[in-house]
Length: 233
Image 1: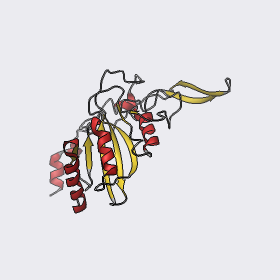
Image 2 (image 1 turned 90 degrees about the vertical axis):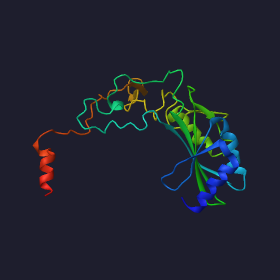
Image 3 (image 1 turned 30 degrees about the vertical axis):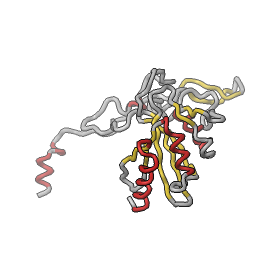
Image 4 (image 1 turned 135 degrees about the vertical axis):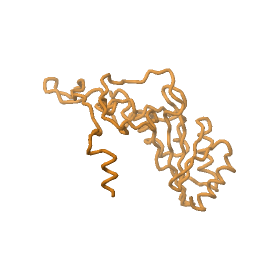
């Protein structure tokens, strides 16, 4: 991390204290985590305080950490199931769980300060609520309007106080949220033109799910460790 960003990290700690948590970085950038209850106060300070001046919101995106850290492809033997989302038999429409893992859904804000030529990433977890919900930052950064609509459409995250929260990428009658990790890869329905009805019609998905086998490790003499060692001299 450069000296400029080290200084920024120090100022963030002095200004917000326990309201923000600095996330360890591997790329020399600053990411902070903010509690949902502190989002508006911290966001307002980041925009208005002269030491920060993050007047531009470059992006808002949702994240689903449902299977974070799990690698189904990392296996030492053949798998008969493949990637679960690709062979799921029962379609997931909406998750009706009473509550989620508190760190499953998050909203990430990418900020830019033109006057200081600095960037900052801010992450807020939505907590256990179903549906997940955070406060809208449209009143702080007007550019959040369509970004928050996209996060709502694709992840089902609600933004309290948004002036016009409705789908922006999927169809009006779309069911579910396609970027959630439990949404089937083939979707729930498919669309085609029905010449008899003279309109576009929905119908069940006709794609047959198939098992994907990422790799097969054969246990025979070609892969013997003794032969490999002898080949290396």
